[in-house]
Length: 182
Image (cartoon, rainbow, N blue to C red):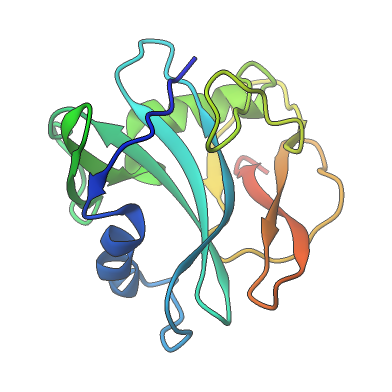
């Protein structure tokens, strides 16, 4: 299980995302300042990569950004995958990557779609996030991340549904990840 450190991070995650998000084709500019709006974590069985599915809102839209935190650059990372670097008060320099393009994150998302990975609370160590609903799928899942969140009900087969705070302040649920095979 991942340990959540109560420490500093310079620059912070929102600062990193404020520079990276506007460069993404799925981002809708003009919504305002980013705020945290939800998410959860997954564990890397090897204990090397931090994995967080972070929701941010900008006053108009809510976005899902899966992030990988690494102690060294990701060898062979696709262009545009690096969100940025930050200095962690306990762990030192961290490289933050778009998790949708990180092989460790994609593997854990596939395991989640199979019902094999356990979602963890975003800000608590060793705490299962019971609010994340998974409708497992058999076979080789291909995880597709839903970047702009839209309200949804219970998950269909091959979907992960979780809660977030919408820009209007209401609490909603949305499909975060789905099996892209179908």
